[in-house]
Image (cartoon, rainbow, N blue to C red; front, side):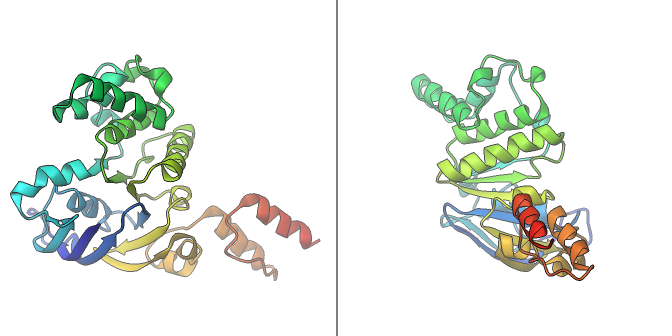
Length: 273
């Protein structure tokens, strides 16, 4: 488990705290969503979780390892992998399989174990047919999936996806969402998804809403994602389908706001005739 206890952080060149007294437990094998407006503290939280930065107050522990202890940082970063929004900044090799092998090689693993991890990771993200490709020939979504494969080859226990589709076109977003759905179904690691994409957050089990450096609400993702008043209060638009239901109900209809599937909404609309 990752345990965050009253953790605060202030960047050295800024006068205000990016995070204020954050407390959060991230359980094993759960998919956690984190959402908030720009500059709310989401990416700062991601960096705290894998030890890139250390809280100025409070504590972050990963499976009992305190990130404030320098000797723990290397092991924490092996346990907690972080994927950021721009795949081009994370690709380090000229061939896909070499890029995926980079992390395991740095762990000093034997060549047959590296080969096994690379093949397995590429299969997990459905990129095995591109093993010999240079990354520059890939689409944005494919590059991001290669980056995810590189993380998986390290066999982390926790994986943080920080705005994984922000830089991608619609097809790339679909590719990454499908990969996330596959990982949720087939893998036993914990995944933390930090995103503005509400469709990605629908795939999470639990949702944390952050605003001005503080957690203002957490709970079941599907319950919170339809609470439009709460989302609007922190500058978020919410799901398109939920906004559509709101507009329809303004005409006097009583369609349930917790409908999250377009086909089901069509069925409800047909019943109104």
